[in-house]
Image 1 (cartoon, one colour):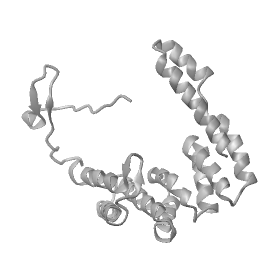
Image 2: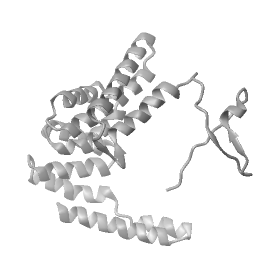
Image 3: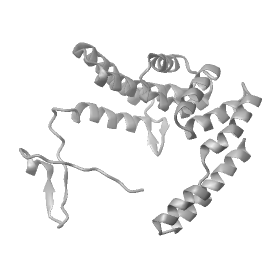
Image 4: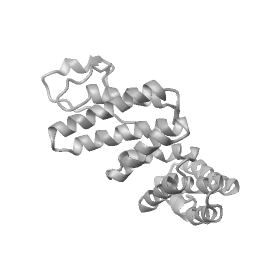
Length: 227
């Protein structure tokens, strides 16, 4: 298992080194054809390990790799397999966030079950946040006003719970608590019809300005990044 993960990571590192060093865009695209290690090409080897060592930590880890690297139907089916066959695995914390964007009731039931029954605090924390985001999405798609408000209220309560019970659980480069605070800010301050929070900065000429300077005018704000 570790050798296979190392093989993929080494090939990805080699690709990234070549990609960053190449300045010609056409040649950069060629690197995707010849050098980029496609996760789908590695998936059968991880699947073989998952089948051979089913019920073990290695089997679970093989499935987690597939679920977090191969997208589409394969990802969805692999996550379902993990939830079914490894409900008590601590590795579920890596795939639970993927349930946040699912629209089916079965995924919400799985999140509720993990939140109440998983023996691992990190898994419960990720399930709590994922369920909150799932319910927020469901609220936005629900035409019944009362039901939508009820779903949003439950979503907000779950995000508050994340801060209270799982604040320090690692999540990417930060923590679940920090993520929940940002999501609560979005729910409380960044919804349609609300006054946008003020933003201060400098324009292209270096002149300081605030968003509130343009109140009453049509304003388009483009947030972007480059990694």
